[in-house]
Image (cartoon, rainbow, N blue to C red; front, side, top):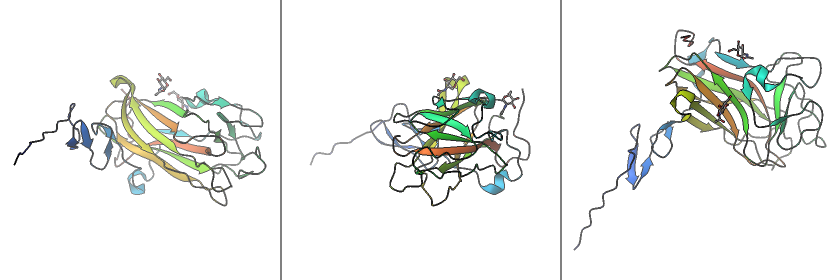
Length: 250
Ligand SMILES: *[C@@H]1O[C@H](CO)[C@@H](O)[C@H](O)[C@H]1NC(C)=O
Ligand SMILES: *[C@@H]1O[C@H](CO)[C@@H](O)[C@H](O)[C@H]1NC(C)=O
């Protein structure tokens, strides 16, 4: 009988207690992902960990009397690969800051539904997602405390009323500019379901900050065209399980 000893090695080695299961193939424990388990992949913090905490970042998009806000993403400290529309009608790859869901497609959307914040005339970030993956949101936050856990959260709503269409899906990423833009954390919302009335749900991830500045990203994770139409509101970054503010100005 011939016995072959098969030795498998992973180079670079598996991190965060990942197991090398075959040549250069790491099996990651829960909470980690990526080729060497180097990327954090943990959901939102529990409510009692962030209760009454003032977010370090909160973007509600403000409010106003006119249906379309004239403010641009730079006023909210972020950039996007989508094109802003200040009047009807949205097309694939465009967005508006708007205080009611418009009726751009024969009532296929939840026409006249309002934002999540609930303030009169409150604006939301309404997107008709592109066929190609795009970046909804790229924002930088400074003065985080290294080693603390933070929650990057947002409220999402599928604005489509019809069933059986492409559902929106958003990939959340956290990157560190001072560490060569390294991907620190990543998690997908999965399909955001359609409902009989517009329903806002909280999504996002949590991560431990290895640097005081991080870039927060929301990326389209589903094809556009006939679906993948969504609204975003109340983008927040909040410290979890910590008595202080979670704010560490240098
Ligand atoms: C944008 O960033 C500036 C400087 O960090 C800050 O003062 C301001 O409050 C931010 N605006 C929003 C809407 O977050
Ligand atoms: C996010 O935007 C910054 C500039 O504001 C840019 O340097 C960076 O490359 C962008 N990140 C990604 C992943 O696109």
